[in-house]
Amino acid sequence: GAVVSQHPSRVICKSGTSVKIECRSLDFQATTMFWYRQFPKQSLMLMATSNEGSKATYEQGVEKDKFLINHASLTLSTLTVTSAHPEDSSFYICSAATRAGGGNNEQFFGPGTRLTVL
Amino acid sequence: RKEVEQDPGPFNVPEGATVAFNCTYSNSASQSFFWYRQDCRKEPKLLMSVYSSGNEDGRFTAQLNRASQYISLLIRDSKLSDSATYLCVVNGGAGKSTFGDGTTLTVKP
Image (cartoon, rainbow over all chains, first blue to last red; front, side, top):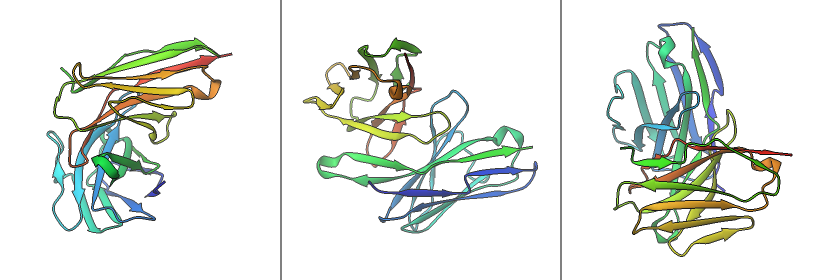
């Protein structure tokens, strides 16, 4: 199947700093990538949909000025958590969707980035 | 009401047992459906897509009932390695997916 990588896998930072997370599709071109956040014992919550070359679409309640998304190429999307605070500590996962025959949209997930803000 | 609701679990079953999970969705216009598996502290991985005609992959059988808006996953002959959280995923179009909260399965020796 398609491979999606994420970097870094784990980051610990001080409160107030900004953290950039990269998501790459390694063997396919992804016009659309998704960013999710998962808190312990909860499900994945979609934060935003990232389309190559255009502005991201954010879900309700997600601050676009705090979570900056850039999708500069068909294989790379980045999420920057600006001025991170302890409540931003979470597991951030990206995915890229492919369109199979019949319209089914399977998503391939990156391995995730565990962010801890001290 | 949540867009996608799953059996809360947890399900604790012995090896060899058959276990079934259900999931309901609220958006009747939803287009595609999946079951994902997520191991602790790992990313979700696709287990199987779900079709109206039902589909089977080894010990796993998935069913979709559009009229009642529910999806099911049946696992036969449970293995220890089946222990994980199973996520019901509903795609409403344009690739945007909504995840259920997941059902945790623990298979015991």
